[in-house]
Image 1 (cartoon, rainbow, N blue to C red):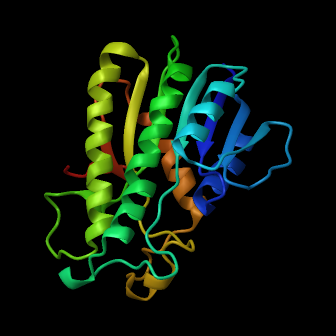
Image 2 (image 1 turned 30 degrees about the vertical axis):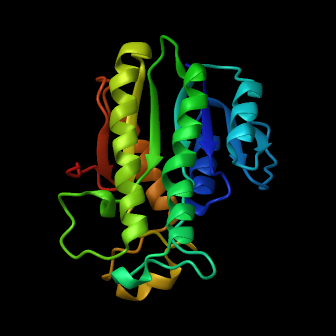
Amino acid sequence: MPYSAIVVGAGSSIAQALIEQLIAAEDCHQILAISRQQTFQHSKISTINCTYDEASIEQTCAQLSVDYPVTKVFICQGILHQDELQPERKIESINAHNMLKVFTANTVTPSLWLKNLTPLLKSDQPCKVALFSARIGSISDNQIGGWYSYRASKAALNMMVQTFSVELARRAKNVKLLAFHPGTTDTPLSEPFQRSVPEGKLFSPEFVASQLLSLLEKLEVDGKASYMDWNHQPITW
């Protein structure tokens, strides 16, 4: 059955790999690619640019034109480092301005996208929504500390995903939410930290995109949120 897919944060490396694989999928007839400034040239793709503030997100979602049931959504954007902003390795490095910037990108903005996209997702067709989280957001798995803002923002995102799923189980029973850990991927986000990655554990965006798409195919719409990694393994919240 023909379907539409929505990709938020379409300028990222993994998002672009997802888009390429969605183009190749015969059943995917429409891709809504949302980013700040990226443009795409393909008959399946509708390029949508947005500044990502709350008013713009609301306006963008209200104006989306969907030709087929939306069965896949990817909310890919986030931040780990930027200019002076770096993951904190000790308590003394915590900075209110940087912390708020990380929480805005990693927790607030994805939540606003999900809030405003939800009306488009309700149908009689299963719709699976992947939000890019990280294993570092697992509270029970935190054994080494550090990376305060990033770690806490992903834990907060996980809580938002869990809480959204409780409500959507009542209001949009066809929607399944996934907090997805892509692993360490060869992108600008991970580049400064790749030297410490074990051999064989630095993944290409194309590999991660393929793993995510195959994971979505396996997930059941069960009214519960899932927290899983690139290898299709569950992560403890």
